[in-house]
Amino acid sequence: MDAGYAVRPGFLPPYRATRYHLREYGVRRPQNARELFNLRHSSLRVTVERAFGALKNRFRILDNKPFHPYRTQLKLVLACCIIHNWILRFGQDEVIPLESEWVANPPNNAGPHDTSTDNQTWAAKRDEWAQQMWELRNGVH
Amino acid sequence: MLARVPARHRAAFMGRKHTTTQNVLAAVDFDLRFTYVLDGWEGSAHDARILSSALERNDGLIVPPGISLW
Image (tube, rainbow over all chains, first blue to last red; front, side):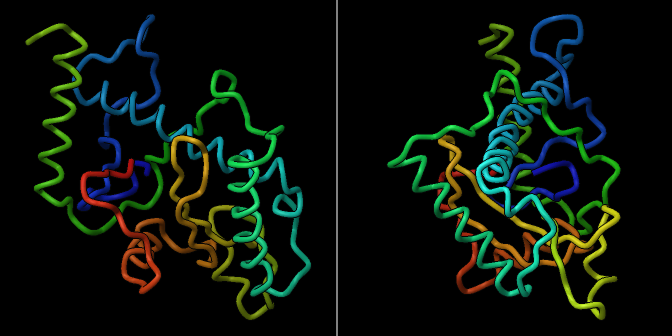
């Protein structure tokens, strides 16, 4: 999820209007709980990006302008996802991009925002977890 | 994802890109396996609308208790 989504039960987008892409250590360290949360959120999002990257590397048909009827185009996407899963479970993978080499997509702060309001219970959970992360990282108990 | 659609649907499938696209919403586990995929929404559809649709469908995305999607 990117910052274009509202918080819903079970869905935690990053904080809006908060720095997102930084390194945990180095010059631009996270300065507060929200920035740390966004940083770690980004490292999870990379998993999704790599999965899509692998899918398109593996099945070049998905990376080209299709020529099948639309309904078939949809089936092709699902079929490729299923075969991708099968290969990862039973086969030998050759296309998964390395996590260490993957450059995260830029954050989508400019995109259209979810018009629904944040679910307050889950927004509070996000705050609580962000605060816990921050305290653990700083050795505060 | 690039899409080819009949001319009468072209406008809806023109999203942020300069060509026709469809949206693919997916949930992925830590082994990079797809655990839920909803494709077919036109390129101009907003992410939040697609997620709503995924949650409302009979064969939709179910988040198990105790799990959060990020």
